[in-house]
Each structure stands twice: as structure tokens, then as C-alpha cells.
Length: 218
Image (cartoon, rainbow, N blue to C red; front, side, top):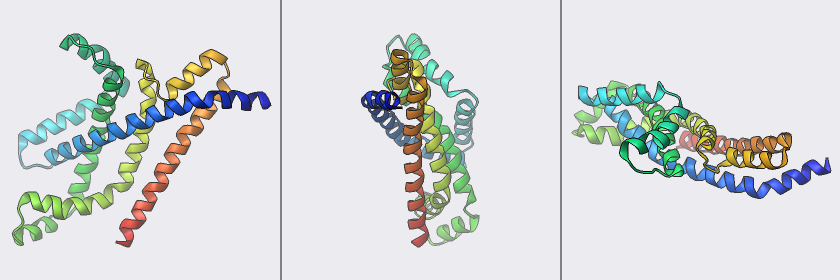
């Protein structure tokens, strides 16, 4: 038992570094994904048929292919086509952003469509433009309903970052692989890696419940 604890303690510095990299990827990717998802979600609910088609194609392509294939395509495929090198971290963030953005797009679309047409009509009757109706009336109401689904997608994205170890990014899973290849203590290391992911996800879940309660009070 003492030996196991020593193995875990020795591994902590590298695992913490990997955790920092994971969180960095998650935060940056989700910021981009939220922007992409919002734009795509608005396009999918637009009256313009071309915009709806573009949004639908984007969502179908991303949701219809595995994230690992998307990572490989961006990291290995695009550089050949563009004749330029894409750093692993950049490729990973792009892949995760586009992937999460497609799912967030559907969350926005469903949230916007869940608001009754009467809300739109009432806002327009008060003289609000379509843009102001969306930003001041529809989105604030829809966002409250979308919070649990957003959190679920954020949790999935956190776990999806483990796939980036396939292109050598030293995130949490890759750090675990490096340590196990050196000391062959798979039980202790992968157990610790699992605990790290669990802590991150539990903290996110608790934060989301706090936000939901604040919305309910307001």
C-alpha cells in the first residue's frame, strides 16, 4: 500500500501538468464552440433557406463522423492539402471546437424553437426588430432552459479531450500513458487519472446547479 501511494505521489506533478493542459484546451475550445454554436444555431432558425442549409450541412458532417477522425483530418490531412504545418495543440483545439460547436448549435436551435411564437409576435408588436427580438426576448428565455444541456455537452467535451493524446498532446490522458509506460503501474496511475477527471466533472456539475438555482431565484 505504501508503495502504491508513493507511485501516485511521484506521478502527481506530471498529472497536474496534464490537467492544466486539459483545462486550457477545454476552456479555449468551449469559448470558440459557443460562438460557433450560436452562429450556426441562429442560421438554422433563420428564414433564409441557404443559411439553414449551410448550418444543417455543418451539423450533419460533424455529428456524422467520429471526433478522432476529425482530429486526424485536421492534424494530418489539412497540412498536406494546405502545404503547411499545424501544431498539435492548434489542431486539437480546432477539432474539439468544431465538434462541440455542432452539438451546441443543435442545443441553441432547440432552445430557440422552444420559445412560443407568441413571444416573437409580442416583441415585434412593440416595435422591436427581428435582431432585438432574438437578443432581448428569445435568447434570454431559451438560455435558461438550455443550461442543463450545455453542462452535459461541456462534460462530454472534457472527456473527449482524452482523444487528443492520439496526436501527442500532453493532456491528462497522455500524461497517464507516459507515466504508465515508465513505471508499469497501470492500476494506480489510471485510477488517479480517473479521479482527476471525476473531480473536474463534479465541480462543473455543482457549478451548473448553482447557476440554475440563481436563475430560478431571479
